[in-house]
Length: 460
Image: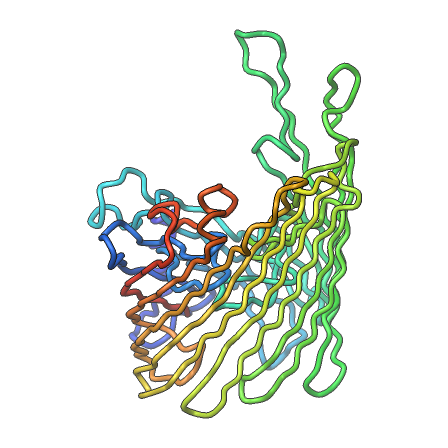
């Protein structure tokens, strides 16, 4: 993989020196972040350790670990501004690189861990535009099939359906057929005891098919509505045990709507509501609470009829003046399984805001504040404990070499200090194993968490 990227990068360099990362049919882009971190309390390793309540990025991403995501576009026939009806097509490849052991993945010099680097292929698809008729785009392969995100929480909401499949887009209409499976035992994969100790037990796997339809409707000069509908089908696993299928067929559905308001000068507000049912009830934590992440337990029939998931997100960015920008979000998720048990439900919420004070074209003072909480279903008769919640505050002096006064300016060279407060409920729940706060797993239950780091982040 490394040799492939190096070869493509070499081919993309023009024969004469000039700015840009595009030459001929090849374009290279990248998102990346890398740096170093310390814990001021006791010096324990904190690099890439999340301080957030549920261990993901919801609540703030400033402490995220190293990550590289280059994207190579082979634009065999490029779209042209002169003739926007002319057919075009491209192949897109996106490998991603990240540590698999919690350490810096630049392991040859930064640490002595073995095999620190994991490489995945996130995108590999062919896309063709103006096929058959103008404005019709077709694609097939594995791709980032998603829309808006709350960048400061690294959270893709509403329609995060990264998967393998094929689709078509015509003006405001977007449809796709996607597939999903998993090798882990559970909903997709089943191992059967063949009563023969000398052979491996056979494993049977099935896959989910998702039919997705989306439509963006402009309703005024600065307003638009985005409609989402999904239907999920998980066929019965026909492998037999005593004449019965390993798992019954099941279905799920999703309906959602998102409103976007353009406030001018790069400012905007987005409000989205999404409801999912059956096996498509995924709406809890994660990097997008994808609806193919079925939440909870099935009913007595092994199905998820009656399971529900609700997600609400409000995300806005406002450029107040040339000196100040604020980016904020509110998020609420509620999920319920199909078992009917009092423990088979969960709730998650977060509020966060990041401010940008442009003290100089190349020096921005970034501050971030978040409040996050979660609650889980309890067994009958168990008293409700104090609400687990966390409050985080970060101060981030930042150098911006481009001199652009924008929340989206990159690259960044940052100094980061984060202070986290964990409530009594969060400390107790973590000890009980209900929460997955990596920080407290490494440092023990405590009231305050600290992070000090120096990091770079870039995209182009």
